[in-house]
Image 1 (cartoon, rainbow, N blue to C red):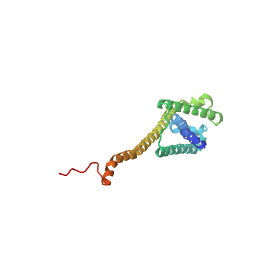
Image 2: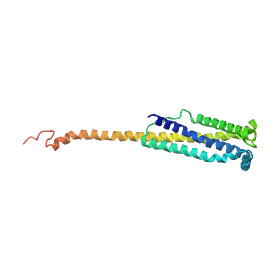
Image 3: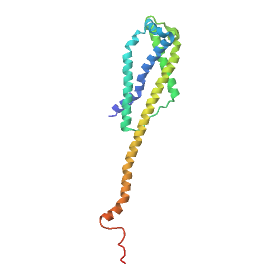
Length: 205
């Protein structure tokens, strides 16, 4: 009975990783644009990168998955409230971690393209040569955007959950306060309603 909740937690935690392929694609394209400018498209086709066009729909699907998961988490925060775990990494550490992952993906991609793609240089020259060093500043720039998105999304969810939790607490306390004030007034009102007062009649003069 606990399999489905655990599976949901795993999906929510892995959902941000669905944005990494889009980030890797952005680093790859940005590296060639920074190197060749307007001729980037020609160089990409000449070096065997035409297959990337077939990858774009899958990247869009992964982005939609990440956005959908965020919206579901936002709905749960609005409906149930509660607290969310915060990132244990600082923003700078998350930024550098994303950049390192993007550089690793780019390096692996270019290495495999050097082995199998026609017209692509092989070895280190195919990875960091011919302007390939631009992949590092490109990865830093894209990683900065990803880290900002991850932290902003978590901050939004945390703020919504905390606000909902405060509203639930206030809504739970208001009936108690109302009952307390009513109990204070009830004894005096009850004696008057039964024809009795809290003191005897005034003395006759």
